[in-house]
Every structure is written in C-alpha cells, then in structure tokens.
Image (cartoon, rainbow, N blue to C red; front, side, top):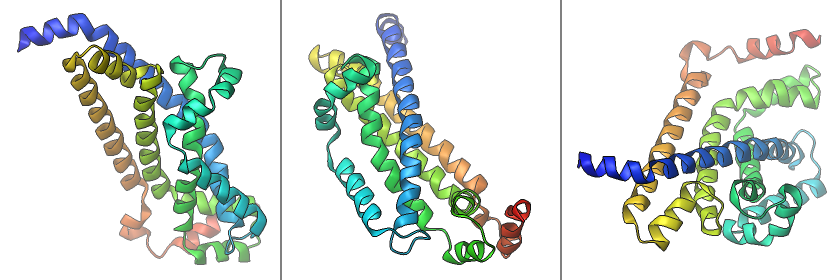
Length: 245
C-alpha cells in the first residue's frame, strides 16, 4: 500500500497539487466577485419587497425576476452560452481565467437569494426601533440588518462556497482546470480510476473543512446562543446609533 501511494504520488502528485491550487484560485476569486455583486443585490431585494423599508414593486419584481432566471440556468449551459462574453472580459474561454466569469454570473443570483433569506430573519421589531430613532436606510442596513443576520450570512457563505466548488468541478468538463478537469482528463478520458477517486476524496475533504469552519464561525458569533446577551437588544441598538445623534 505504501509503495502504491509513493508511486502514485510521484506520478500524479504535481498534477493534483496544481489542480488544488487552480481550484482554490477559482473558488476564491469567484466567491469574492460574486459577493460584491450578490450582497448588494440581496440587500436591494429585502429593502424593496412589499414589506420592506423602501418598498418598490416594479424594482423588486425586476430584481426578483433576474435572480430567478439566473438561478434557473444550469451552470454548464450558462458557461457555454456566455463564452463570447467571457472571452471579451478575460481574453479566453477556457482555463482558470475562462471559468471565473461564468462562476461569478452563476453564483451571484444564488448568493443574492441567500442574503435576502438571511436578512428576512431579522426581527421586524428591531428594524422598527431603528426607524423610530431616525436611522437612515444605509444605517439600518449597515448597523441592524447585517449585524443581526451575521450568523445566517456566515452559514449561507458556507453553502455558497460549496456550491461554487461544485461548479468548478463541472467546469472541468470544458477544460476549465482544477480538480474537476483532472477527474475528467485522467479519470474518465484515460480510464485512470485512481486519479478520479483521489480527486473525489480531495473534494470531499474540502467541503467538510469549509462546512466545519463556517459552522464554528457562525456559532461563535451567534448571540442567540448566548443567554447573557438576551434582553439587551435595545441597549445594543442604542449603542450602534450613539455616534449618529
């Protein structure tokens, strides 16, 4: 067994390490840009919905339609459909760079919906209290919505990253690089099943590590699990707006 592992790693180790590096690059950059677009989109959805603090029926329906359409498109189809746009933006349709644009486009509506769901869990009474203090929309978003929804946003971040990781594996079918590409090229096309299963194991380990890390982070910041924090929301809200008075 030890001899097999040594031989296997000597032959495929550098390829797998390159695949892991490329996967991290795709996931990291795509997650960053997807959140830069998806977070404000999710905030806009929660603000403009019928019961939001800035209701706007037409804008909400438009944004809601965009998010629904974006989430309805299978990633592989979307990736192929926007290849001209991908080449226009990054100069190539394939490889790590070629995967980032479709990853961002596909993940953004998913993240927007996750953000909307997380923010919708914020106690309406806290929002009303902030409004009664004369807080602006920006202040309510920055000092009430986002802090109160932080545990849910963190857990949603884990789901988003794992989803993007799965998308990178699918992107390997069109030569995007990363572990998915290795699994296709070596495991499927060349019939080297050992490489296929090793990539699967690496992906499982990555998913488990991400989920455990974000679960721990969510528990550590969730004041709802801290009994001493209960009953102090009003004082906490006053403290958040102390500098605005």
